[in-house]
Image 1 (spheres, rainbow, N blue to C red):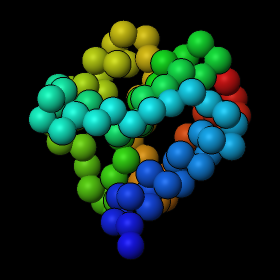
Image 2: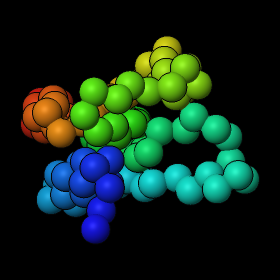
Image 3: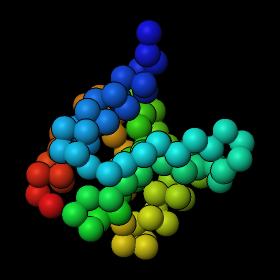
Length: 95
């Protein structure tokens, strides 16, 4: 059975796959940089990053730093949980 955060990732990926959007889930596993978002991709010329959380959990300070760096660099960054997947869908539909 999937974890609560895993279920959020499934919902997010379903929206991306449905629209045939380029994306991937970086596997850091101790070899990459810590704090990298769960899902990154590009849609209609926009670089985006998504950090998934379950319930009321918030990104760590390191995750927030990475998300802000992406925003400061002109990308779009989201923190998505079970209740706000619609925010991502709204952005995708509006791009």
